[in-house]
Image (tube, rainbow, N blue to C red; front, side, top):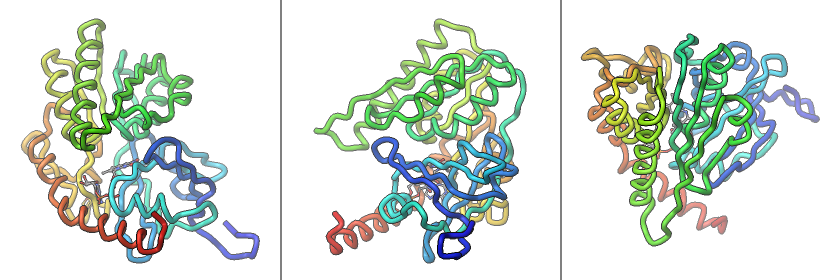
Length: 298
Ligand SMILES: Cc1cc2nc3c(=O)[nH]c(=O)nc-3n(C[C@H](O)[C@H](O)[C@H](O)COP(=O)(O)OP(=O)(O)OC[C@H]3O[C@@H](n4cnc5c(N)ncnc54)[C@H](O)[C@@H]3O)c2cc1C
Ligand code: FES
């Protein structure tokens, strides 16, 4: 894509907006991804010259116009730097993809598709496609009140969209508050499973919440699929950073997944592995916040 001054920009940011607290929408020109991407696949993005590669999920795309939409939750340094420093018209250095396997497009019947926090964004293309091929899809979004996203899109795309907004208790830490999201999530899932018959449960969200929901679902014996989010580096099967144990076998989520059968996942190992770099991640974020303070940005 050429700018007005004739410079070629590969992955131009066509649109950037904060759609809810800590949730940023990026519409990016990436024709090679837009042309081929299927629901359930992801991309690896590197936004800055010395930056890391992070996986994000195209949630909408236009094959002819060549754009994709990503929604990123501001979690640590990279997503914070993207939210703070990228502007419309800027270029993203690399957008590699589509990666991973498409979600299976089958007639399962009545599906409960759950998204915790920004996970609902990743549920969107899959739930929409499942509904389009004849499934009866109910989507459930559980998150903090100011973080509700994409409600209008879901209401148009699926049979029923349920939002369970959880109030943020300002007296408590973010970590403490997340426990209320887990509680609301498991309570709502239990209520839905008690009152209706389901053929499939699907969920995207933090692994701790996926495990908590799975513990509820397995009591009912309903099939459950999950999109897993282990740490990824290349996203193409070359390093094994994203390895997960599924049914006693080592799988690489970037090439064998990201979708797996929840009944076969070693949840405790996954939860342990995603927290592996938490000290370094905290340090990187603190350092970046100091830089922003020194520049007078915050
Ligand atoms: C297949 C896949 C699709 C994803 N899609 C989305 C999406 O559409 N929107 C969204 O907001 N988030 C998505 N994520 C999660 C997103 O990649 C992380 O939030 C992001 O990498 C955090 O980077 P950070 O530097 O801001 O935070 P950090 O401080 O680096 O990390 C915070 C937490 O994010 C996770 N994380 C960090 N680096 C990676 C990495 N390279 N790969 C995977 N997880 C990581 C870890 O659990 C970590 O504890 C996806 C993850 C995967 C694996
Ligand atoms: S991220 Fe390297 S093998 Fe999956």
